[in-house]
Image (cartoon, rainbow, N blue to C red; front, side, top):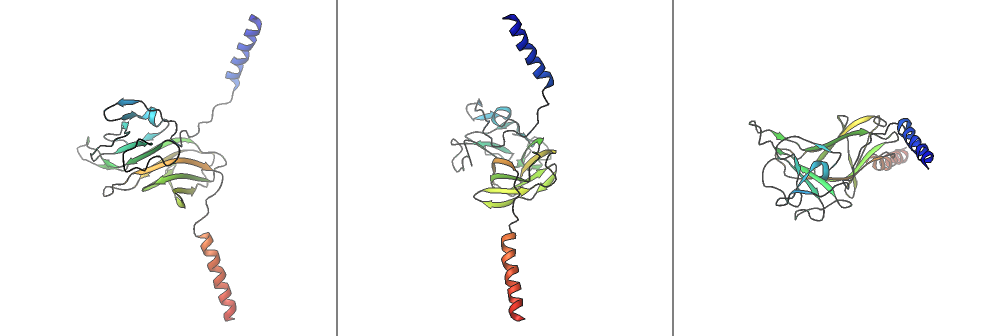
Length: 223
């Protein structure tokens, strides 16, 4: 009995020693890893490491927590976890049980009172077969990968996608920024972020081809 237990222990140890290093991919891209533990039952504040594990965020006043069920009436940034309990006027989650939304604001802790465009970000390994980045979204936003803006196209139904040539297999920061600006007052809501092996078709492609055909046929008729 003891010898069999020793063999199992040695095998387990060898497995740990010789196993390949883990791939540090992106996590919680659908925001479904949220754990709802209120750190202030009166206002419904949530801690970042539980409500949005894996994600980092812009700095500034009121950014140390994620709002839940309520939003404040101040002028600083707000990060809000959305589900069926979200404040009236939603929308609620775009897909599944949770979505994350955020809006820029002033840093009231800074005497200069600067306006900050709220963002969420995380760094990971882009899959080797990735050709595009796709996500559900509402509101104004820009997407950046390794500091380069990804030109996102509206694919309909709240789905957006952008091609990411050259980023496959690289370790990159993914950043999503609310672009409403100082004069705007609109949340960005994001969900179901996916690195897809399929490229996103250019929106002009199905339009230009029929036009080219009409031009050619017109030239033939003139001839």
